[in-house]
Length: 331
Ligand code: SF4
Image (cartoon, rainbow, N blue to C red):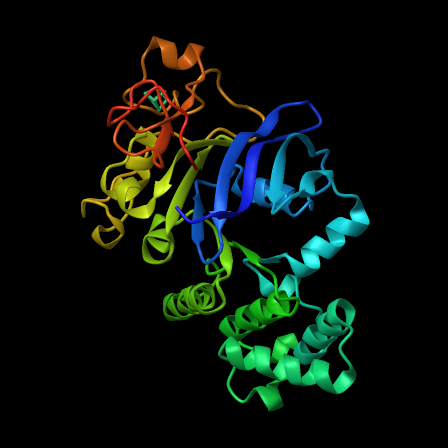
């Protein structure tokens, strides 16, 4: 594993009833790496990343514990002014629906140029040139002309590219992509995923890809972290996680996929429904849906332990699909 750019330790977010919607989540992220954060809706993926951005929505959610080290700085301890600088220069985020995150009454170029002026003190001309270059980098055709267009004049795919350009305007080291292709049709999805991979490879951008779609991570990501009920249940490099999953939930997700993403070709579903946030079962939060569950599963939360063969691949399960060691791993 490459040296981490970001190291998250025991990140825990509670709601107003002190229920842990994100519970002791730990992982690292290296420059030029794409980490897929996978799970069903309500698994805590987005709340985890919003906590990292220090952009938890209202609704009484608050950081309860945890650290997030960006270099030598624990960004969880920064005051609002310094965190705003981190969000500008170090971390950016893109969303499923660009229309609601781009300013509808400002041209695309204006939105990029505004960031360049605010964060780099760029002059008007310089900021405009940078905006043209960014639009070119994200594959917007004829960027000198499109720079003066408004978001509603772009197609869905072009709007997603434009939002990526706005996020890149501050030259972040880390990009969090929250279901960036879910609202797009299949051919445009592929183009956007290719663009993100290209940015990872060309700029060394570290990307956290939040998705419910294992097929997307199979195509794009270097490592996979699987979440269920606010907890990490499996993490490791893409190949071992997909080829030799340790956790029954990961196996269930794989079985839901067509062959190309690692599934068997016979589509199955995972029985039951994921728990709603705040209404988690005791012990292993997956035990109400798990065919391997034993008595201990409802009583005790399993620790996240490394595989016996691979210290970078781990899972939290009392009856894993492959043997676990007694060690915590390096993720
Ligand atoms: Fe299933 Fe038990 Fe493992 Fe949870 S701990 S995934 S219930 S076997």
